[in-house]
Structure formats: C-alpha cells, structure tokens
Image 1 (spheres, rainbow, N blue to C red):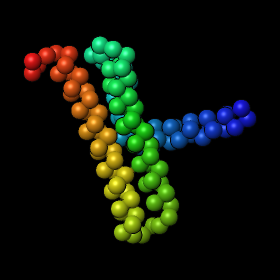
Image 2: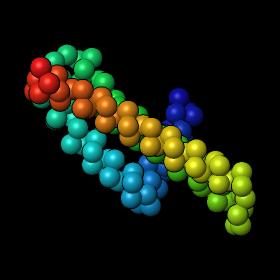
Image 3: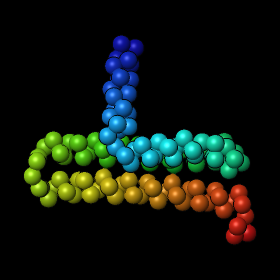
Length: 118
C-alpha cells in the first residue's frame, strides 16, 4: 500500500501533463466524455458498451504512450537522428491505427443500431 499512492501520483502527473500540453489528448478526452452517453444509447449489451468506450480509452492510452516516446526522444537529442524519427513515426502510426480501430468499432455499432445497410 505504501507504493500505491506514489504510483497514483505519478499517473496523475502524467495525465495532468498530457491535458496541459497535448491538444490531441484533450480532444480525445472530450471524445471519451461524449462517448459514454452515446455508448449507453448505442450498446445493446454490457460487452458492446465496453467495446465502444474501451476503443476510445485505448486511443487515449496509445496517445499517452506516444507522448512518452516523443518526450524521451526529444530528451535524448536536440538534433536530427534517423532512429528518433523512426521511433516518433511509429508512435504516430500507432495512434493512427487506434483511431481507425475506434472508428471501425463505432461505425459498426452505428450501422447495427440504425440498420442503415440492412
């Protein structure tokens, strides 16, 4: 239990940093806030709800990891390095893939709920 509070503070500081300094993360937080009530409306089961909200939460997680990668890369070197560019590009690609995944999950749920293509 002694280590739980410091670990929580570290996590809190990471979230606070992302909220203050990362516009993309702030946008994703708003998407998460909006997604919860929409998921209640769209989801037929708890599993569907978890998939909808979880896909947005996963996007936020990947964004935080990408922010961490960028911070380490920027701290390692102030000048161009091919390896740092690769690391940053791969982090960015991970965010893009998580956006596409969340979009696919939500698109499928909307189609299923509205019966657009039925």
